[in-house]
Length: 433
Image (cartoon, rainbow, N blue to C red; front, top):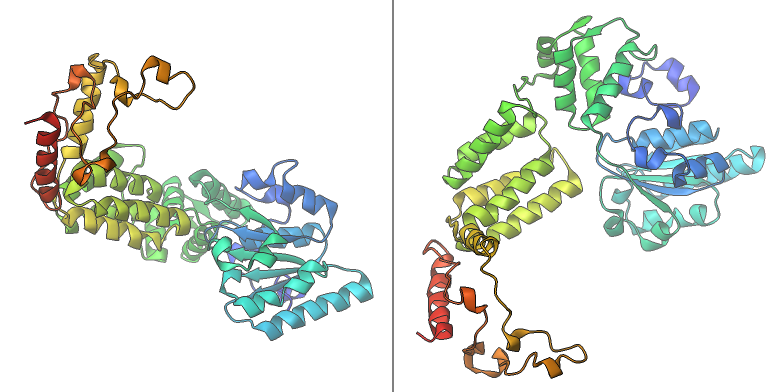
């Protein structure tokens, strides 16, 4: 089936603002500068007009469909779009057969765009291989999931993988400003107040399509688009939050202190405020990872695992789904037993080093692997702990200047209680007490 981008379809059907504002050339594309610069693989492929196979991987609203359409438009190829959500093997083969027929009869090439290609099963992806292998079509697959996990290797190995990034606030702002003035958009018929523009940028969360959808909804309510109009159109209140000002620091401070105080409800409230205000989810995730060691530490070592997993999940899937992963990590951190023994331990050790308490590494601990080390006595007398009962052997490990310093002082909270007891016995044994 041919896409709605055919000119006849455009004239017959009023199109959403997000569709009308799709760029027609690579130079009109906003964002993705790493893919569109002079000499980049995408530009070279487009300029050569040779059949190609691409995978576009990135969060929603970053321009995957747009880039596919631009490639088709610039190279004057038919644009055929298939949704992997609803299409089957029969649809794929029919599209390929039509493309081969068109190529044979008129010489015109076809861009076969498969949206959500990760939803295709192996049989459906296998059906694409002959067309890709023989260059019957220019294949472009769009996915929000890691293609190395969701796409068969024969198809992936025959394609160029391009990774799209979330749009920046400046990118989304430029998209909105263009839509207000461009004849294909609102054509200057509406005015967008600066505060309303910033609210739309926050609501978009790096998704250009979402920003244009919200702008169009607001424009239907009147030509003077204010924050109040946007709130009414989108049914979402504007969160008063300046990411460069006091609110940013106050809210993140309250967020950390609520987790430290074990109030999961309060912490979730501040998490929601930051997400709704458009705070960078990666910033939130980084603070949770820090908290997991700084305020929980060995009282619940699994807390760090949850925090890191949430940070990786946010990086992989973005918002809005990533807020679920962040919420899980917040709840884990807030409800976990607390200990700041880890941060105090490294702080004390760093403090001593900065005071000059360094000393020489004991000879028996020095590296003895390089030629000549034995002549220097390096490694002499080292006792291998695995050769002794319980994997412990009494010998000096720290430099003499800090041999009696105590850095890690575990609490008795949560899982750190048993650690404290074991560490006390180990320390006593090593120190000869």
